[in-house]
Length: 107
Image (cartoon, rainbow, N blue to C red):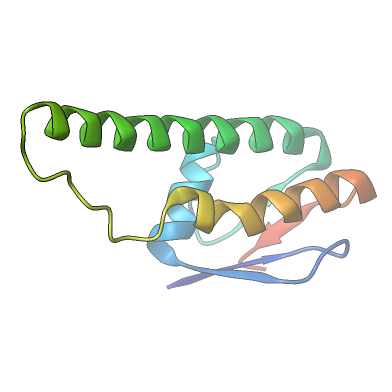
């Protein structure tokens, strides 16, 4: 399944299901087949995503530091980071908040 986020204030944004689900869960939305994010919800959604990004990066840095302290090979994080996945969505949220337009998916 794909999530296709649409708004009249920004271009469409498409995410694979696992990534879209994670982003929606972070901002407190049910990751169902349809939904809407109202402009009033967008500043909180941006803050939640930014907080989750900082938390993920801190956890990764801690894991590397811990492994290095034990003399082990530091772990690698081969997957695409939350920052990379969420940045286009954060930009969409900001544009839509500025234009006072909702974001919808599955409609």
